[in-house]
Length: 360
Ligand SMILES: *[C@@H]1O[C@H](CO)[C@@H](O)[C@H](O)[C@H]1NC(C)=O
Ligand SMILES: *[C@@H]1O[C@H](CO)[C@@H](O)[C@H](O)[C@H]1NC(C)=O
Ligand SMILES: *[C@@H]1O[C@H](CO)[C@@H](O)[C@H](O)[C@H]1NC(C)=O
Ligand SMILES: *[C@@H]1O[C@H](CO)[C@@H](O)[C@H](O)[C@H]1NC(C)=O
Ligand SMILES: *[C@@H]1O[C@H](CO)[C@@H](O)[C@H](O)[C@H]1NC(C)=O
Ligand SMILES: *[C@@H]1O[C@H](CO)[C@@H](O)[C@H](O)[C@H]1NC(C)=O
Ligand SMILES: *[C@@H]1O[C@H](CO)[C@@H](O)[C@H](O)[C@H]1NC(C)=O
Image 1: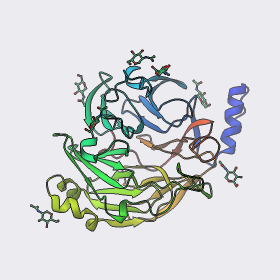
Image 2: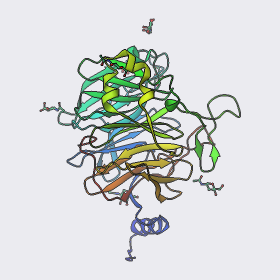
Image 3: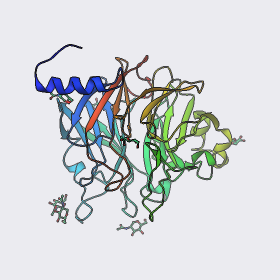
């Protein structure tokens, strides 16, 4: 190892030597980061969710470890106790955020139960830095509060959104209409509580309750043929996108989509996933504090394991073949499902770049 003299570099070197081989510290931030998206021209956007005191926010990483609210202050100004706050025009609860294949930064606002208009998919044009698409989702889901993440079909005409109460929302981006499918299917249900570092994750209910989360992670294969999905406690399935897309117009299929699902592999309790150009899915294991790699054939191995990979969530793949890993710091115990820092984003080298139909 090269010997450096400044304090900052010594600190980084000490941490780097303590990290698993290949794992590199990229950013150290004031707030815990749930997700990172990097545009084709290198701009970096973060969703910062897990704070004990502050609402979730979207930011752009502008310089070193400095952030500014994105796309602006107004969208990040929601205040539940201020009746002038408009839940249709502000982020109430950002759950997923990613640059789509169309180059837009898409934010999934899971919203909040009982807050009308809060559950929505919001698209930001990165050229104008302004919101130019909004899809309100409660007319499809029948309630506010459960939508978690988004992916797109190869033609960019359909969005798939996970509904953590145990369903998939299929949204026609042209009409804004959609269907909620798999709701009665076992493949979308939480069949076991979440785990963290060897223990069950406590739930929000009475003492002794555990946290169960239904359909959460979704990916689309680079050839656009399959939609992968799983409940948050794992158990990865795939289903042909042709069937999924057809549920928009075929009610029989919408009611029986689960019949077309195929098991892929038994994944663990998961913080987040991403996919590369070769179709490998990276799964963040919240129990072993590790990242798994699942090949298109369903072969699962542990790629890297480190205590610092603490509830890694929305990962990203860049064309220089790096996997970006935000350690969100969500963990049970203490004051709710959260702990204070350190708020790190890491990188890890992989063998492929991003899937072109997943992100630009
Ligand atoms: C950002 O934080 C990382 C990790 O602590 C550090 O290596 C890097 O030098 C910081 N960047 C700047 C510009 O301060
Ligand atoms: C939220 O709104 C309430 C009521 O208007 C106000 O008292 C409080 O200061 C606001 N909080 C923030 C963080 O602006
Ligand atoms: C309440 O929200 C409105 C609209 O965003 C804002 O103009 C006003 O300053 C807020 N009031 C407080 C007390 O935060
Ligand atoms: C919220 O939406 C429901 C159902 O559409 C409606 O009955 C209710 O009045 C709305 N509440 C508010 C505060 O707008
Ligand atoms: C974003 O805005 C620019 C400038 O108006 C426009 O040329 C571009 O097509 C927009 N991008 C998308 C994805 O619509
Ligand atoms: C994980 O559990 C082990 C064994 O109890 C403990 O030593 C370690 O500090 C825990 N790590 C984290 C990151 O919570
Ligand atoms: C609708 O889906 C069902 C079940 O897969 C299939 O049998 C039927 O042919 C489909 N209808 C049309 C019009 O495609």
